[in-house]
Length: 292
Ligand SMILES: [Zn+2]
Image (tube, rainbow, N blue to C red; front, side, top):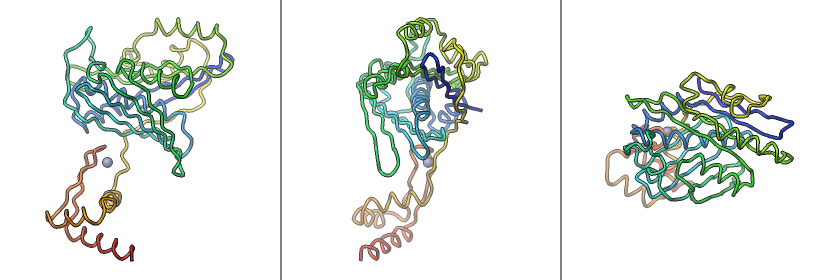
């Protein structure tokens, strides 16, 4: 079972979030049929959105969007306050040559922008963007937090893809420096993180989120929250019909004239919805009636 843990080292003024997302990222791989480099990149973006979701309040969600000039083009992940995540990759069939025996996520992403959009509820949104620093996602996310949200932070994200292309380990952690942390604490943390092993190796060795948290900090941490993590898409037939209505009368008329059925595929979970001409026509009729 995948988990996200949030904890605090009170005296030192550090907030830490740790994540194990192996099953979730494997599910995402199967849904989107990603090739290894794309799997690693997408897994990190899903993980980044999950780490950010730990800061949300009830009913809120966060969208992490990475757009680059590399072959992957664009990746999007959306996570809600219950740690339910979904996403898509524009070009899932990307696999590049290894770099230093690692999947070359930086090259697959390229130069570009990271956007963070928070749906705070009641039609209130927060938007922030930063230029990508490395395209490796974790460093970009740390840069985003520091530059855009003024939260000094360290972020680590890792995905291990096996020779059979399956995800064998995925996860990460994020440390926020709270106001009041001393320079001594910051120095300690910096030194500690320098020697820290890749988080995907720790998970492969069987470490859970508690151990990742403890090992990253090397300090006693009080766990504040523990949440299960799932790949989840809330799409439904009703939502698909709403999207069609949102196209407007003209486009809907065109669709109804062209084909017997309109097939709509959800880009987050790949589920297909088929809408018949009769259904379209009755939607159109309802629209006309409601607009009087
Ligand atoms: Zn869906």
